[in-house]
Image (cartoon, rainbow over all chains, first blue to last red; front, side):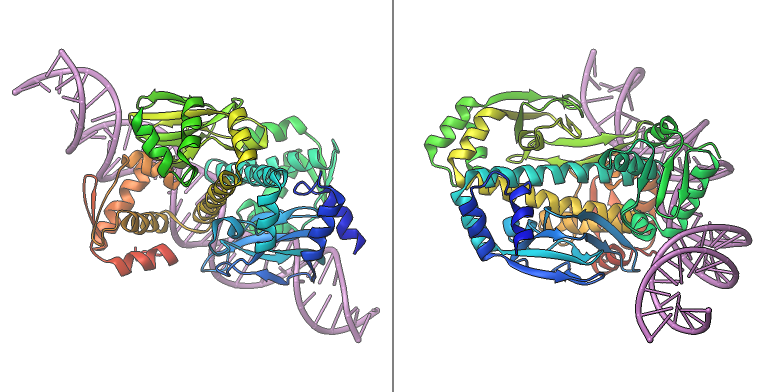
Length: 229
Length: 229
DNA sequence: AACAGATTTTGACATAAATCAAGGAATCAA
DNA sequence: TTGATTCCTTGATTTATGTCAAAATCTGTT
């Protein structure tokens, strides 16, 4: 489908590739629709290939024995996921499922490894993708270990404000439940923190719209993580 | 120095390279002694290259504003570290310092990127290294977010017991303070947990020697994380 | 052997966040 | 519109772990 071609040729992984290579890629790829809540792979499954999101949003997550979920990443259009087993040779370290109605492309390991061996620039792109992912993990570990929930939440808002380049209003593209899971907490706690930040005049919440009232306050909170009472 | 050659030619990254390439690598590498507690790079520094540990042990870590430390990784002989900026083009996301008297090799970015572009097998090795590192981070995030300190500690012991392949006794190669920092807690808490595990007959502690008394108990603890009072 | 410094342990206490339980709101389908 | 399901909020309580302070132990050095 032509949408897939557009996404691929713009993607971090394959941008810069000549059209013939993109065609070759598309010819080995398998497109798959994913509905909300549909499981794509489970932790421990053997990874016979990796995926690129064409449309929608995919979460990669872990579950505790008691059922608490921690989202590790979310992947939108153009972003690859599930590549770790392709290179490490082991099973998927986490599970993946659709957060919204999505379409994804599956690339079999073998064909992709061949492409990389042939094509140093794709290898470089892949190295860059994995490096950026490592950097993100670094931040996530820092957040979980060294910061408290309000600081993580403030940091998330500031990041979103950059990504959506909007100074004063951001729109959550995920549910608050998912946000809680991404921040490493539970919905109850998130709800309380949102109320507290509201009471302190930092933000205003209206369903999925967050109005930033005190950016500097948020920045301090993100860095030092202390909220007066 | 000849030690470096041996380590490099056995390392995950460069194993399989012909001797001429190893020689080329050694000719561009800069060897550096590192003493205990010596800083190698700081978060935010621009990364002009990466390192391989030849001897000793290096920690890569983050600090909170209040000074709490979280160790992200520790790297022993043959293990590369600090590669993220080489491929992502940004600054170091964390800091590195010697945990013991060490020797490291520094590889300038440029020369290394050239080597990779020439040498698909090195690129593949590097992809494998980064993939494995991502897998580790996955576990670390899971531990911090979904498990409690006793479960992380039990998991650590079981892992060490595998790595040191010794069923019943393991020897910590780092101080308890560092272990606490690696597990995302503080020395006081670690100390208490060790005592508790001792009281429950799971382990016996004698300075840096840990005797495993109840392996199955440890496995349950690592998975479910519940200790009866 | 003895000191200085670092490391580890212990106790009393504070607190962030999880749990449990229930009630409200929003969303979707029929 | 109605009901049904999911999502979100709120309050009361518990709990794991952090903080602070001090003592005890270990380590290497002179």
